[in-house]
Length: 164
Image (tube, rainbow, N blue to C red; front, side, top):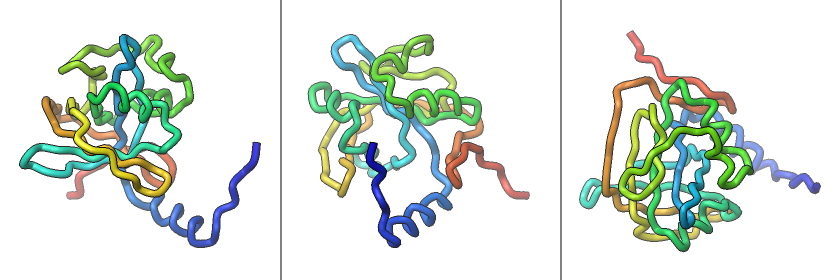
């Protein structure tokens, strides 16, 4: 296996971005009857009219291929107690990532229980963005719970705490 050398700018950029605290989510979709999912930290709300989100997927993501033929996805924003799911869905297990994992169907996409938020979306647009593809999704269902979020900072999982 070849290790890619980073330029000094790429290395500095990687370190600078690791200092940013990001929420962690699992994006899910169906390929026929098989559920797929992958962990992402690059997502955000995009628009209120209409309600939209943006997710960023690596060009090599198997989920990106699924979204090409099945344009619905779920964004499962993980709670502080779900770091095991974040690690599991960050692996390269394909549809086996769901083995032994509780999930249900909401608006035609896999939803994970115990999350702080869930949105079911239809793909509105794919946008080329360097070594990633941005997926713009129109929200069809939105749910939330008042629990602590799972965050990623300095390459470790944690959570957010209020000051004062």
